[in-house]
Length: 110
Image 1 (cartoon, rainbow, N blue to C red):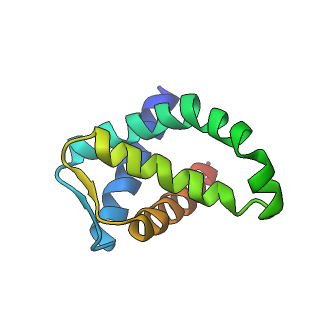
Image 2 (spheres, rainbow, N blue to C red):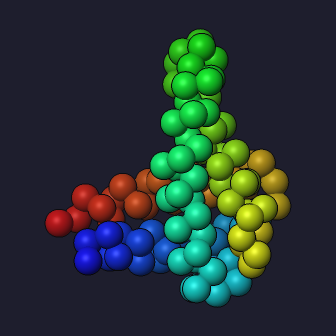
């Protein structure tokens, strides 16, 4: 039940971020739910592999390269989910920052 609530909250955050950012488009709320599921799966499966492979670059940039990894995951999700469109790398970066901050804020409200 708690996982479903987090999923719906993340979908709401994705939908709100897409509403605010003109470079990101989410067709419906159902699409936002699918995007939340895909982003969750990519973060669980693909992100640890990318973090390990890019560890030297991440250390040299003092962790800032992890933002690039998050951005690439958002761009991959936009390629996988129909109805979710991100125009450029910079919009994906801003979207990932916005979703991360809003999700952290909402998940800390208990």
